[in-house]
Image (cartoon, rainbow, N blue to C red):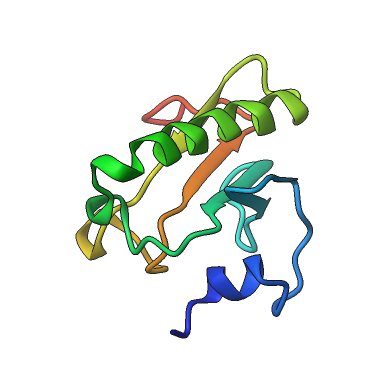
Length: 112
């Protein structure tokens, strides 16, 4: 399998960990869309949210809890956004489930 996120988690591609535990690894996005933009990925390869099943629900909850922990570490108490892009039409560009944590600016939509 040639998955960029699996390579990052395995340490084959350098990254700066923001948060990590036995189940997840979080690191800054290379192309940030906000002052704080962190990717939170499960260490286990799961292609997308659509590929998760009942057995993965605890992991999905853990991913969200990890997002909260990272948001606290980054001082995002005034608000942040957590996004999961799923599938090609949903904007997913890497076939490994991941959460985008965005903050550090107003996340209102539409902007302004």
